[in-house]
Amino acid sequence: MEPSELLRRVVEILERLDLLFVAAWLLIVGVSIPLVLRRVRPNGWYGVRVPATFADEWVWYEANAKSGRDFIVLGVVGIALAVGLRGLPPLAYTTVNAVAATVGALVAAIVGVVRARRLLRERRAAAGSDGP
Image: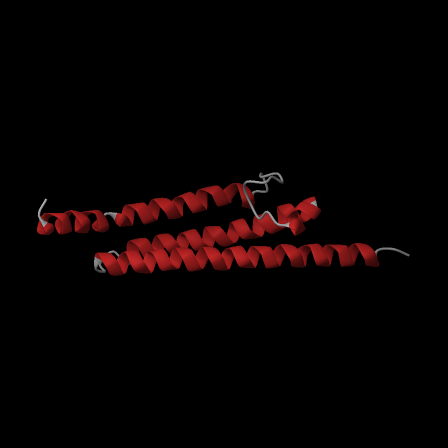
């Protein structure tokens, strides 16, 4: 295969990455919905799985519902980027979408962990103040 043919094929693939990004964001939204609806029981595979969420079932459901909402927002923003930036050159398009996905997921995950810790701390403080 000649270099020009290889380059043409690579560009064709990169030009169709919009479908891949949209599909990935739709998957994120789809797996977040059960979390928002509080349908995911505590488990070791799916959801915000940190000591704070395993320490209290209420914290598990609350933290995961809020994190699910955050990931749905992230998914909608990601879909808007994937569709709205299709006119960029393929490498720029891929880079922007990949960075948005990575940074967005990291921020949402960190927020989820911090939120879970805060919820547990507040719940324990409230339980301690309920006494005589």
